[in-house]
Image: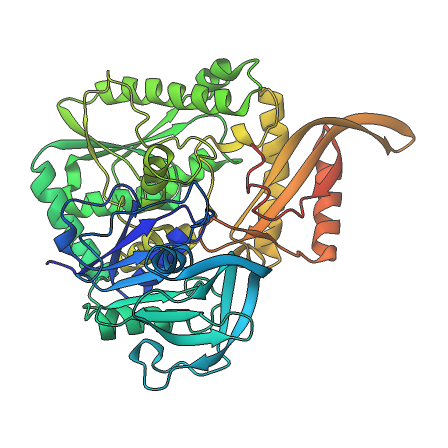
Length: 511
């Protein structure tokens, strides 16, 4: 089945992935490409959205897209930087704003009878995020909406299906943002809403069958949502020809290796568990730098996985649980304006000696879509509701060098924290939680004795996609009990702190 597609050109905004996700929530397929790498098959896209950007259209570093195959040919929606680009380079004027236009605002004027604003009323809240503002509209620009501070909040170009807005409809703070996107994509661009979990499963299973045929496929399971959904999809497509390997890297949560293996067996997946804890800990001995730890863990995994894969005969394919944000970030790092924060462990990280072809059933979808697909496949909600857990596991939650004793301490601490969240009914209210073992010893008193032991930090955040995150205001009573339990039950810890940093500027993990 051929789906209508929307092309999103990325100018480096932190919100670009949110635009794609909002479009997909309308059951419309969307793809993100760097602004300077427009796909050659542009005719395959029914509409184009230009994202925001940290750059200014007035600066020497302004980003210039080639819109010659798009503008006036395809329906186009320009958001923030895109809107200012259209104005500045098409006869309008963009100038520094007197006040930084950031945060909530309300539409004070909407052009009556305008389909772009159908079912949206004056007073509707929108989210602004720019330091420049459009002083004069471009040639043939028609004003569509204003706020009290921003006169040219929205406009269209006469004679084209081109619309532009100086606010962000993709963020939750724009209360009618989804409606605005629907007005543009469905009512104006005439795009069909047929991108659903059911259609994705059906098409992905068919694609795997035609791509892989009767070949054998090996998949490294992690116990997480992505690799599990990938495994179930592959199992649905090729059955007994799927071989799953679950490696214990010695950096999993307490008892996780055994419990996850049991869970997979109950799902009818063909899984082999490999305990390689010692190999990983040996590879990590004495390494303190976070990126070097990630590389050491990644390399050890590849070696263990390769050893096990060689024990299987005639395996032709390697399956991975790569999801769309991994793909976008890896592309942006080389071809787009977004910065690389840290290396991903499963995109382009395979060495030449693994002469296997790659199959990635989830590479087109976001995390929330993975969960929806998993639910449609009938996977246990408890498994789908699991918090994200980093590939390097506790290896990046132990700051500094890693030893078996530090892993033991952190596993005990983490188990008390996570089990406590579940017992208090808080686990599902948190997007991700975990404990960090700090390279700090602090003075304490236990009984009549002075102690000099480890400090741990607890972290719990709420988020929709991990791109931004706020720390969770957990009840004091819960934190008090958790702290007491950790200090009383975990030998080697005498101090517990709670991390109240949001992302940005902090990251979710500490390393």
